[in-house]
Length: 143
Image 1 (cartoon, rainbow, N blue to C red):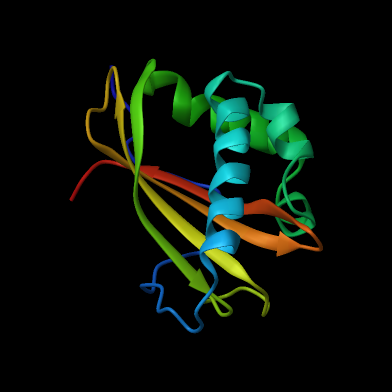
Image 2: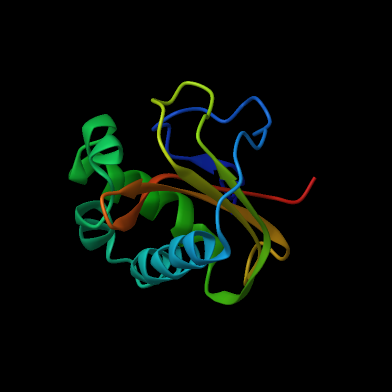
């Protein structure tokens, strides 16, 4: 079976490496990490409608709930069961390519799926008032 090894929600493209523009506090990064973990748990359990509803308005404006559910299911289904996930990097920034100014934390994880060991997952979280919400998600094979 051919597995789609590179999946991205094109809320905005991260084709240019992220450069850290500002320094966030440890508490801000931790809050973003906790929110990302809750959101990814929804994606992991195939609750795509719930993950769309929990995403930032920027995410929701770029893809409909139905489009997200279809794309996420097609991309994540072939990967099989998630075996493990660990945070590899956290970057606080106020500027990302092709995205509006804001406060972001770019989280990179090393993940192990049944059909894709050592995958790299990236979740881009944006501060929305007092909470953190995802605006982008990518999963790809290691390079």
